[in-house]
Amino acid sequence: MTAAPILSSTLLLTLLIMVGLVFFIRASTKDRLETAQFAATEAQPPSQLVNDLVTHFIQRAYTPLPREVSPDNPRIVLSGQVQPSVFLATFLTVMAAIGLLCLGLVIALLLPRVGNWGLLLGLLSPLAGLFYWRRSGRMEQIILDLVPDQPMVKVTGHRDELIVLRRSLKHKELV
Image (cartoon, rainbow, N blue to C red; front, top):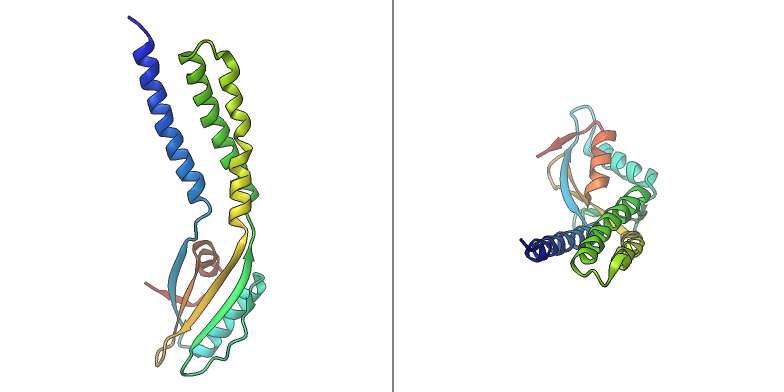
């Protein structure tokens, strides 16, 4: 029994896994915007909720953009620089190294003349971390929409910021 069909199918599967890895690395830099609604408690007026939200985001290094809040424009926009995650950059680099080394191993087995040179593909793995690092550090906005005639505020922003907001505020979140 020859090993060529087995190695060819292994190469095909490895290439499919590499495609998935590339999409995973690309997805790590995408915006993940979500919207959450927060209601003021009975003990606090809606203005206190807005003040709490603005104070929370200012403490997280967001700055309010100059815009007048009026009945015609009940929106507050805050802007801030998002920092890339060292953990995620390292994780993506390690995952790329594993994937590229597997691809190199399959190429080395399939093409014996190449020898172990296929394993040098693993040296490309820091490019994944660099790609993430350059693309994920960006300016993001948090938008606070005041719901007229209701004690609610819609908060639109990055998913991770909303997770931190939910943990730190004691206001009721509406689904």
